[in-house]
Amino acid sequence: MTRTAPPRLAIIGGGPAGLMAAEAACAKGVTVDLYDTKGSVGRKFLLAGKGGLNLTHSEAPARFVERYGSRRAEIKHWLDAFDAEALRAWARGLGVETFAGSSGRVFPKDLKAAPLLRAWLHRLRAAGVSFHMHHRWLGWQAHGTLHFATPQGERAVPTDAVILALGGASWPQLGSDGAWMAPLQQAGIDIAPLQPANCGFELAWSEHLSSRFAGAPLKPVVAHWTDRRGVAHARQGECVLSEYGIEGSLIYAIGAELREQLAEHGEAVLRLDLVPGHGESALADRLAAPRGKHSIGDWLRRRAGLDAAKCALVFELTAKSTLADPFALAAQLKSLPLRLRAPRPVAEAISTAGGVRLEGLDEKLMLRMRPGVFCAGEMLDWEAPTGGYLLTACFASGLIAGRGAARWLGQ
Ligand SMILES: Cc1cc2nc3c(=O)[nH]c(=O)nc-3n(C[C@H](O)[C@H](O)[C@H](O)COP(=O)(O)OP(=O)(O)OC[C@H]3O[C@@H](n4cnc5c(N)ncnc54)[C@H](O)[C@@H]3O)c2cc1C
Image 1: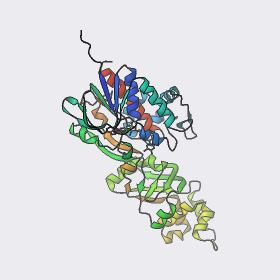
Image 2 (image 1 turned 180 degrees about the vertical axis):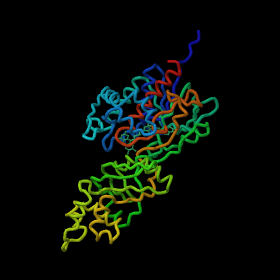
Image 3 (image 1 turned 90 degrees about the vertical axis):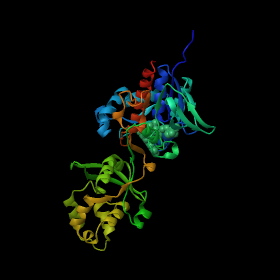
Image 4 (image 1 turned 30 degrees about the vertical axis):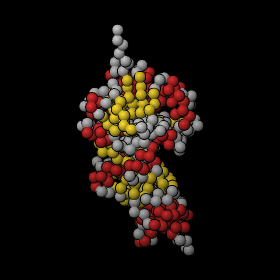
């Protein structure tokens, strides 16, 4: 009697999505080979841990899912399988307790990614996942055979099913460079252009502002903007002046809208209220008091509470005649217009928008045009602000793809 070999699943990409897919498929009895172009897996995950690994968010599920904007309906299905609570329980299972900070963001107790990744890889190896590093996926050869470049030369790997979890195109030095687009496009897969998300925006700063105030925080401020449907929005938060323009969590949170406006109109205007605690007319009265020998900068500090960075920004963007008129100046402080010129390049962004369109995938994240090929993580066409939403959706989609591939292989 001949015994058929157990089906083999290849997972390409060892970020959070690929590793979670490996865990899910392994748990269903599938033999998993995981390939990555780099010498080790999880490099972006480790980088994410540098400033404190924001794993997920503790807000209510209904609010959580809203963070995925136009993709919330599809991503709700992923989160039904693996939500923030499930993610925290999973981390606990790896010996990593989490806590929710005052903003609701959830972190490991030690804030680090490395202990979590170490424990996870140990568990995956024990479960039988085989890791193949320095394998750069180039595409498919005949009969769906996977084609890799390795230090020993090119390698063809036959497989029964494959999960692509190749990440976006930000921070390409960590492995995800978006080069996967070419073979997928050749295979006729519909891909939305890759774009920067959670990124800074460029403005035309003077040499003085960019050299003296790069890195200075602006806080608190309220950003006002009008979306493409003409609806006005306001949001309080923090941003940071940079050499090229502006960045920071407030900018990231509204970046998708700003990026789309720039693409459509070539310009996006963001108005900053630099003095959220003051009403405009009371502020004008305070500024209108006799100034004596105080300079305008000193006056802005004393009467409006502006720090040096906010003052420099006001001087940068305000005409002399406005500075001299307390009423016009108060209006300017409450609504300082920033004319954004372009988002920063995707290579610098925290994440990538665009990717494999979800319409081309079934509910198990299998490509409709290519049965047996699944996709997961940031390479899919969705985006979210920072706050743990990125990792949560990567984990959840990896789980769905891993389970889907196992089912497809008949396990
Ligand atoms: C500075 C920074 C901080 C971040 N902080 C947070 C945070 O605190 N919270 C949060 O939720 N998110 C954060 N993110 C985003 C988060 O890290 C990513 O969304 C997440 O890692 C994406 O997971 P992924 O598995 O889809 O892709 P990746 O983590 O990018 O993994 C993809 C893998 O595929 C491999 N690969 C790519 N192409 C090939 C190929 N052709 N052949 C073989 N292998 C290939 C890569 O080497 C890589 O290992 C941060 C990102 C950055 C850049």
